[in-house]
Amino acid sequence: MSKSPLAQTSIRRRLLVFLVGALLLMGLVAGGVTYWVALRSANDAYDRSLLDPALDIADYIRIDASGAHLDLPQKALEVLVYDHADTVIFQVRSDAGVIISGDADLPSAPEMALGEHRFFDGSSRGERIRLIAYRAPNGYVVQVGETLNKRDRTARELLLAALVPTLLFAAASIGLAWLGVARGLRPLAHMRTELLGRSPRDLRPIAEASAPVEIAPVVDAFNELLRQLQASSTMQQRFLADAAHQLRTPLAGLQMHLELMLRRELAPDIRSEVQRMHGATIRASRLANQLLALAKAESVPDQGKPLEHVDLMAVAGNAARAWSAMAIERQIDLGFALAPAPVLGDPVLLPELLDNLIDNALRYTPAGGAVTVGTGVRDGKAVLTVEDTGPGIAASERTKVFERFYRIAGTKGDGSGLGLAIVKEIVDRQKGSVAIDPCEGQGARICVSFPALA
Image (cartoon, rainbow, N blue to C red; front, top):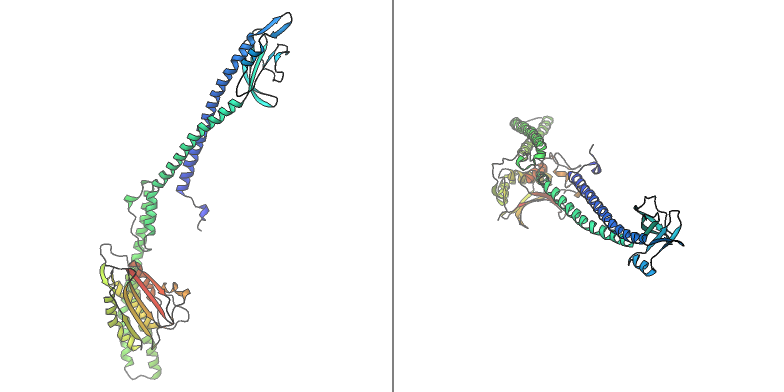
């Protein structure tokens, strides 16, 4: 049972998923690390800017008869905590927790030794702030906090500065990975194209020099399979040709003896039986000849034997002399409309092709009908046509009639169903095309075309 397309694996897809996923992950990790390091550096710089006002405020704490107080003018204090982007607040608290000066809405400071300072995060009036707490030698705790506007803006700038080069690098890396995978798989694509361009019976081995080293074992195994198929096909064709060839001589002898018997005086019932035997012998002889022609057409072409220049007009002219007697016997008008049609082909198989077309047309055309053979050049193609006034071929049957031993149901005649199969095989060997064109009125028109020569 064949797998569905969803279950099939693709080397290209697997490579791209792995490489692109790895590159994106590395880009995200690199961007995250860069952002974290840069943000830490920015936080350290802004934290140091909070330490200075905390130390300055601690220096102005005075204790006298009236108690502890901050001996610092308001203007100086405003300058000390001024910031153009953030709101800076402070607080001075005694060791007992009594607020001496500053904003009361600040979180409690962590436990610290004398002369120690700590940075921590908190909130004031619903806003996130960054604070420093400093315990002065006299035991008082000074806290200075600021909102996070500068820090957030710096974080966005650092994130953008880190992500843009990372994303550009990732995009360039993905593009290079895509090109690299495509370039690495190009030999496989060439091999696929070369195999798809072959005919079904072209069993030549794949050139191992053009195959990548990674798939060399697969190519070797495939070539071995092709060699086995070629040997099996050759053996089958040889058997078919030998059997057909061996049948031709006894069938010809039997036909001759039956014709001699028919010349004698025979009883009516015996003559009827002999005539049926004679007809069956003729059909068997024709079938043997067609099997021999089919084996010849299917045989693997000799790569060292070049094709020759053949004019289809000359081939049709020779066929006129060969088939005129049969046409006259069957009371069929066999006509020829010939014009030069040079092609590069096999001078043995092309006459066999035309003989099968004419024979097929004469067998299915009733007495009084006509068969017309034409040659010429049309649209850069050398064309050979055989048109008859027989029963015609329905559109639904025009592809099936080229199959071996296929006969249209209800068709009269003594054909074996091999004639058009031989034609199709020869046309494919000559890299041409064959089609059954629509015909005005009754009948069929078979058109064979090949690349024309200048």
